[in-house]
Length: 261
Ligand SMILES: [Zn+2]
Image (cartoon, rainbow, N blue to C red):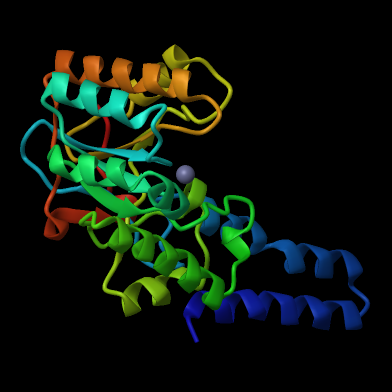
């Protein structure tokens, strides 16, 4: 059993013992003491207790890895590809299996234009992936793989969970398939309700060589998401950053990520 599971259960057992010894407030405090730490494991890319997740890559050049989630979609993917071409940029698209099944030609086009594809689950269960069973996780990963195989679109063995929220059973499933979990160093929260300019302001302060950048396409706000990708690519060009596809061996995990200036 992993150390963090033992420690977590230990807190709960101690709380039960305190309750039986008639120390109710101490029992409540001890019972909930590890919960903030557990919550951080689910949501913070730098935390690694649930398994390794890449958050940056090793480079001595002014390079970043741009990753774009939630496609493919005819309302956005062709425009994103045009923007990337205009900037001479390469990116990895973390695609949703059901979208690939609907638009297989777009998945093939992504690769034919020099970009790569990663796995972003089959149905993007953003509200429930954190508590999915091992069988459900396997079905989400393999469903997306199946859609990509049917589409005849080559793909990398990279996986990103929906909204970046992890699951304690995920690492074992990825290891079985020789896959690597990829999160990010910086994001603008462009999937939320704010403006693309505000999202740009948030991500700009986190840029540094070796950063993994998160952007989105498709969804119910394709316009603002596209605007954000354009703003980001313009900013990267002005700052002299190249968008590259790092080798898997260059990926780094956890809190040892790049430090923004
Ligand atoms: Zn997503």
